[in-house]
Image (cartoon, rainbow, N blue to C red; front, side):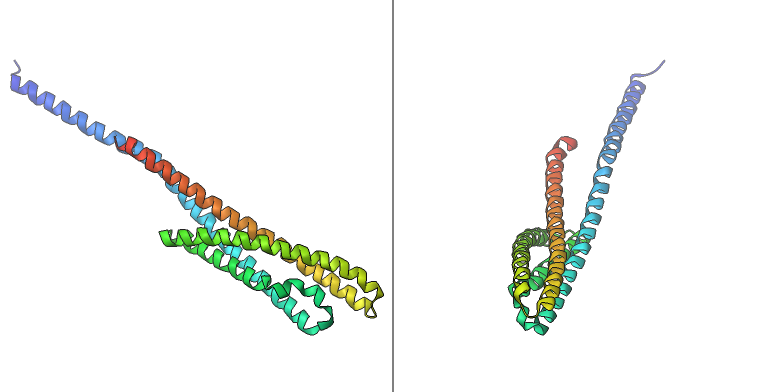
Length: 212
């Protein structure tokens, strides 16, 4: 015949067992919920580093084209109208903006501190503005080249003028493509940080319900 003390001990053991089960189950559920989020965050950081590296290479290429354009300008003084973009300084300061923005993206992807994230976000916005200004300058240069090539028909150095016009059009077209690439990368970085911010807000809102 079981005593009341034995019944209480069994109830206590059952309740203790029930408590341990209830404590273990949420941990399993929480782990299964949050592991994919960590993986997606790492994937976004890797993507940010790749975009930053491409942006650095993009800015370095624009800078190299600007140096080549400046060397042509120093040799052919009589064809200054083909080097309007060089006088604006866009190949220099535009390239520097892209390089700094890409460097911050790589640094923020490796270590996402608050200061790096804010600086990268702000520099990406600045790079978008710089890219838009550069597109305007390059479009004006291409329009000027088209008009200058027509004027070359009555020039004494017609062949050289046509050659310089074709060379300038090729450089401006390549720089235009690289500027569009820089614009696309800057917008992609902004989109990544916006999605990361919205995901963090959703986690902050859902965390009280999970803890309850």
